[in-house]
Length: 183
Image (cartoon, rainbow, N blue to C red; front, side, top):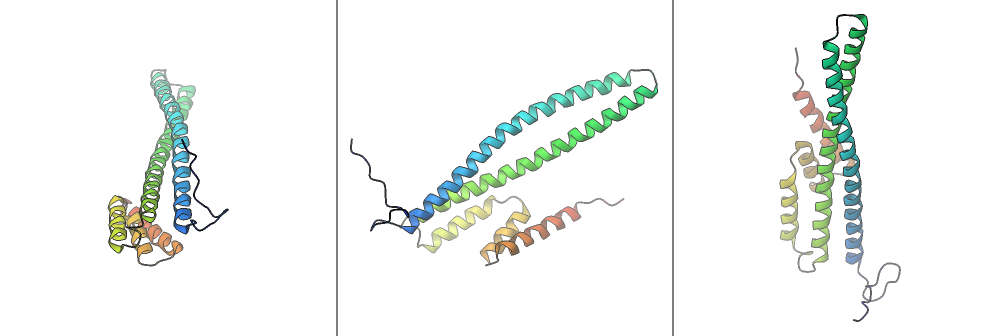
């Protein structure tokens, strides 16, 4: 078995050095960081989910037990505390839903970067506008949230990152305002 010679890199450039290979390495590094962070986060959230589920079961038991107590000041305090804890647990569950949305977005970013690295690394595809449009259309089709689609469209139309984020925030606020129920 012969030892494989590493391609030249920015630290030791030679005639084989390529900015494309450097770009691909940096994209792959970003993908690895995202996937590693998601994996670590998933482990922590699984632990939290189990803990919250167990707490919710115990809180329900406490509430049911308190309901059977004869009327008293203590019963009222226990039920009030029960309601408070149950409400906070519901807040945690909503936070888990936001975490799930974050993980979905990071997964899309990871996939996007990996597909971009593949495209950039292929000398037959990198200079083909059709390949770039295909990649962009595929990415666009994966967005399920309107604010993400607005941000994508803004970037493709030449907006800065700040402008694209502002467009996404505006869309998010419009969506939130449209779902507010007035009494």
